[in-house]
Image (tube, rainbow, N blue to C red; front, side, top):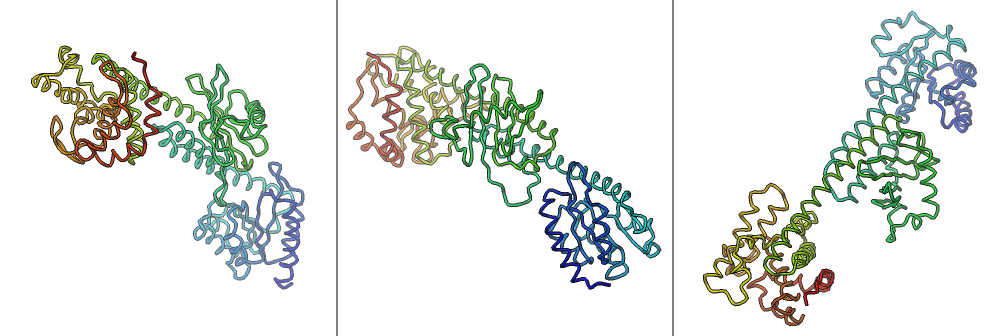
Length: 522
């Protein structure tokens, strides 16, 4: 018998040459200690193709060599395994290690033996999870072809089911993020990441770079908005697709034209595109660049993804509509209160903008600052319960009238405090606390320092700043120097000193917001 070393060396050279021509072949492993068996098997399988792919034949001259190969490669589809090699049961031990030690239950294992009496067929198949059992003498070229058709079809179907399950699990796990309300750009980024992961289910290498876009297209006007982009498609300041890549609009149109009727997905080269329509006259497009076609999951999985995305987008639009409606109602109610009090309706808009600017600069989480932005217009909503004779009295209020006026804080708080809505809960805190003072001499509860809720402290500064910096029916705006002097003098007594410092730092932004919402009273 030839020594194992010389045929392995010769075989390796041949295998290297074959691998270069069957890079996309079905990986099969022949494990046998007889070089002639390898040669005859390869000869019999020459020209074999399944699903328009050839075989990539890998040779091992012993069970030990096969172990090393299997530890490095998890993609082997079929193993032709000799029973008797280094020992009389080396093949059976290897099969047991593959199933139990390596945990590979997918690969199809076919035992080949020249000594069938040493390993009874029924016992072997039952005990060692073997897929087929053949005597070497019965494996003609025709039977080998039949065997490989059967084994490869089975392995492919197993892998398809596994990939489908992974894809559905990925969609299911990602649905939690998609169906929770978040800013539009964050929602789009979540969708893009999910699409990327879905198209790389089979990619077991390092994390693939992501270059993609999420577009929103108005169905009637055709207007395109870039919702999110990553990698080389990070949105430009102009928001124009042409500025990302001159031929990108044409590429997207070509890809869209490839989507089959009633379908959602198309691929061209390394670009993949998913398109789905929501019920609000908007078409949404996800595009990824640099995708390997061999990693694309089954079409039904992609259809489930696109339908899920359509439902998620509808859900997002509905929640967004409700939130915007809430904010609009709050805004209009605040304006109505100010109008009744002979104040400018733009006052509440300016106070909201000032509060937003100060809150972010003070380190408030963006989501909380957004709630404050929406809630602050109701800071004086309690004035709705103050009699007109007091509310609109042109002269100075008497002590009794002033006590009535101060009750607008409690009235506003009581109106809003029972609500379960986040915006109205915040508005209740602001209404009841924006006339408290840092030194504890304010009203209605004489709270002091940081016991006063931060939203109320911020709105207090925003409210006073706008009253001093804007014209009204009663007075002209103060000069800027006088306003700054007032806040400096009252820092630590009326106002939170840290917020006063932020007021000075963000003054240009505050003045820009004032000018943006200026109203011509005279």
